[in-house]
Length: 187
View 1 (tube, one colour):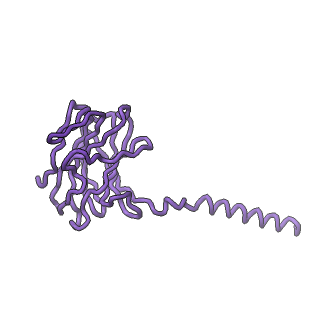
View 2: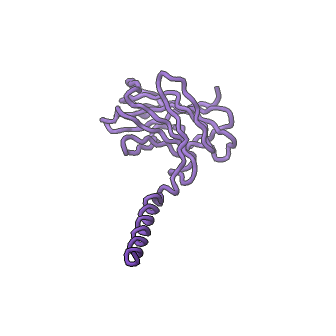
View 3: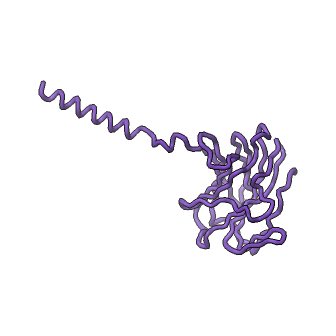
């Protein structure tokens, strides 16, 4: 038994080390953002989602082959999302600085080509600003699940919250063209 005891203790310590290693989160997960989840369905009542610096709700979404604004236009596969956003507590940091669409492991950022996008628009407490975000997507991206992420940070935040809105792309309507309108403040 005396000869087996060191082997048993060693095996126990090795098993404990394996268990601790398996239970320790990866370093990148220690700094990720905290998702505040919402969803959008064309036939459902939209519900706002509130983070530390933003309150937002997706009120409409549509695919189109042509996006236009003033004298500018672009053809392709576009997803245009209409968002109503406001400041929950303070107007200090309340702005949508980054809007991204996550589809099947790919990340697409809202285009800045249409003039007057919702990106960068200062938000007010209790008063919605309604604007559009246009995402230029590959031609084959029109089905499956996607996630819209909105944050007031210009890069993906670390140790802060981010609004995530689930979108079922199969359920989103298609229209021939969309005029990207400047954001509107108020009711």
